[in-house]
Length: 263
Image (cartoon, rainbow, N blue to C red; front, side, top):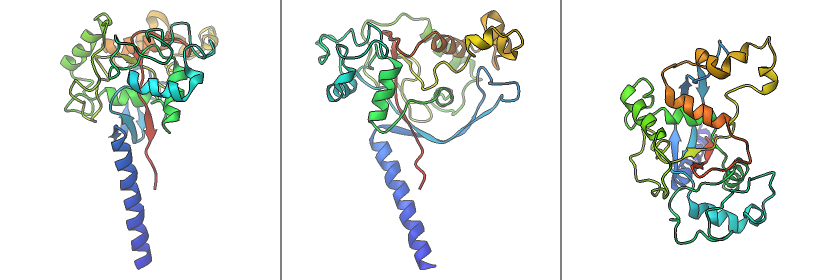
């Protein structure tokens, strides 16, 4: 009995150590729950469980990505293969290994492809968040874990989406965190997710006249949406599904996530 108790204590301490290490790395602990996706995978899947996980509190910064590039020269803009990034990849840096004076290292990195973002997270022992995870956390206001029914909160997000991309981004962490302790999921940059093109079906399915998913496309797409007046969610999904993995834009960055460690 004493041995079992000691084992339980050790396991519990190990779990606390892992939690502390993730918190020290700037990650927020997100307790799992139920997500009602904007586009349900099927009529029977209008509620999707999201498991507990960790998410970076802040987007990855220019300085952090610069260090990654220096350690992994295959991701320099002058070395990367075009299959992994378009010609605009890190084009705002003054040289392949220097930000220049016009870029603050604490602002979110942009002009990165999905391949590069994924490689960065993997170098940290992490991964990109899934779309369901990202949307689950993004549905929280500063006081509620799920504020999707709050029209005032929705409109604030939509208001940001209508503004032009600033010439200089602010530093990360200057806005209040949301309920989970995550900063700037809205109001700074768009963000890559692991399965960015999973919300809509492929062109093969679209061309199949018998496919029940054909209504996801064009104007009919709104008919299957769970919240037809949630324009901000619609804009996010429309933006994601317009992307390809090698694309880069001046308003698209990323952050990393990590599975909950099981003792």
